[in-house]
Image 1 (cartoon, protein in one colour):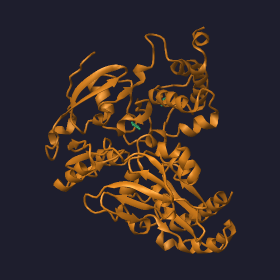
Image 2: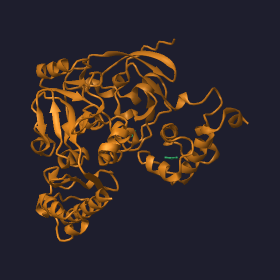
Image 3: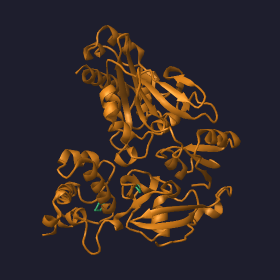
Image 4: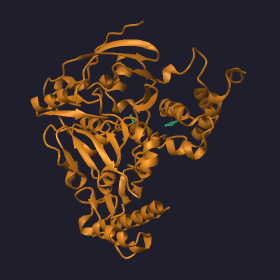
Length: 266
Length: 185
Ligand code: FES
Ligand code: FES
């Protein structure tokens, strides 16, 4: 790791100030992606601003619309929360399948979203559930938030404070893990509301998480796995690498989507 | 209260492209002992434990967050000490493999690994045992094999093929749940 200085502000405004004062500073949430990145010297921030002691960034609240989850809430907390289990069980399932136990004990919702790794799990939930990413300065609808590989709508120095997830009729997440890295090669989150079905895909897209709108429309008129029999996402939009071709990933996406529908409908 | 004042210098500190690394004072509890130290912010928790405190039971198997050889407990929860900064443990309690035994009496989980041949070379064992103890804390002493296998996916072993590790954890969990007088028999 290159050297950096370390700050641990106790107020959100101080963290915002620290980032504004130093364009090379980076936020430290759970560190489960950032620290491996630093160890490989793929980044060289001048300072890390640790969000762990700022009050109000952790916690899960039942709201009129669904759930509000603080950005520094760890995966283990979401996975084991009775409230999440009751309101959006698919979200608890998703969080319980991120990385491994030790990673879930450190990794956070906000960290995952700010990083926006194309194989991360949370982006699929946020996009399919049409959640709202709340920051220190505004509310960003999921549809506007994700902008590509590791690219989000976040401005310089903007800090995610919580995410508002609306409750849906039913939802489920299914992923196919890379057997070696255990990251999603195709992860599909299906969410059904009274008005529509949204299908979000992670791990497979060339430019990160995306909505598979064709599948969403088909499932809106008939919420059954069979309606996807004749649909496959366009392989031109999917990743091709040593782990699998785009056509293989397209097939995985279809199968994961069908399994998610089956699970959600139960 | 023991005060260990140490400054961990990493190999590449001299070549650092900028000297941003003002050192920082931290105080934490390690295996029940209060420790104060001055560290560089980039010091990993595992580096601090091994190099500053000489607690070399915690191993580095991969350094890429995959193998789990470095698992310790931070405030009672399993974490990868190769993916945690020492400064992040400031004010908190760390338990390493050295903190489990009571004097010369092995912790029931350690004893179970010995008894059931849950190790061969032993490199993964400290992380396995720390993860196993965390598992029992979360699922109770009666946990079943699928739960054990499922929750061990962050701990890699190059030797055993896992069967004996799973057996050891099953037995160790039961021993941890047994009333003390029985366990001591
Ligand atoms: S050394 Fe930490 S996970 Fe391998
Ligand atoms: S006993 Fe050798 S790595 Fe597990």
